[in-house]
Image (cartoon, rainbow, N blue to C red; front, top):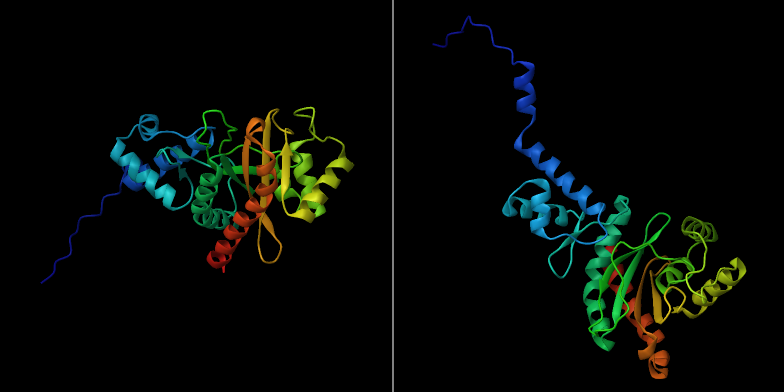
Length: 273
């Protein structure tokens, strides 16, 4: 026979309720947000030990959080097992595209890097800026470098031109005005009409040059990753010192870039279908 107690249930104090609300799950969430905020504020990737020290957790616990955040696409891991975060929070659609882009592009970029041993990079269009999202450095001691998270000039860099040239006039203008137009080298185009003509030429031939327009002594060729409907939200490039830029490379590089960009686009079509 069940008996009913006459005792009134005890009310939890405010302190007890607060302690109950601070569950291990919420502490993990707080630590995860600390990681994202820390990585988003850094221009360089961070090692596991540095992240663990920053958030006050052991390496094993920190690694579990990092792998969860990486799996969800909030942070990324480079070839040295260091972690970084895009400094612009993408929309859900952008995040899905960016994740798919990395999945399709990484093996292709590795092949491209192996062709000449020069630095290859990939950029992605966010709302009003173009950022570098992948880099494979040159194997040469003297090289043209790039870094993830960097904002690109829509009128000077080959990656920036390759994306900007295929946007609507409104989006292209917003990209130009957001970054601003100013000379980086004596070769940088700063006249608005000249920039428009250059972007039209990129659109017509399907690739872009950066001939010492962002850095003196550096040559870069980029190509858009163009979807079947003509949309472009990404581009790839190869850059090298002017001293290694031979006439033979100048002749073969544009088509090479277009072919590899097309290969990435084909992979994207399957993943995003």
